[in-house]
Length: 133
View 1 (spheres, rainbow, N blue to C red):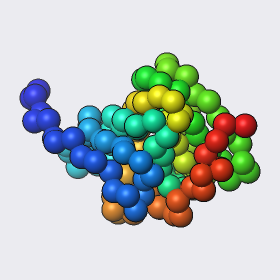
View 2: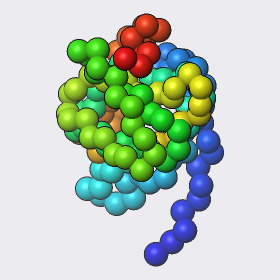
View 3: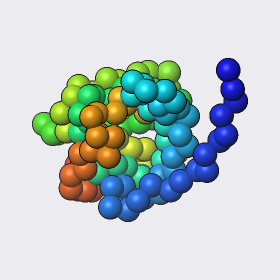
């Protein structure tokens, strides 16, 4: 057993995010065969991801604020603190904070064969698509 060093908080890149979003890596593979990655992600009010999908799906657990999760059919879900959402492999989606409040979630993904391509990043979300219904 060992205490792992804490990686520095990183600001996510504007190519993949609108607004200010920060990431703290909580867990990453330590041994051969491990694939789980867990990140604590904090979104400033109104910040959001671009459209994207995950090779092996993604689980989000909301810690604080209200998360907005968008689907290609125009559905925008309000996800409350303590709720968990699973997005299946390949499903295009986005997630972010409401315009009024910060939002924080844990993002749990499983690396694919090539960790660099586990997430497929697409276009930015239009401002009108990121509003609540």
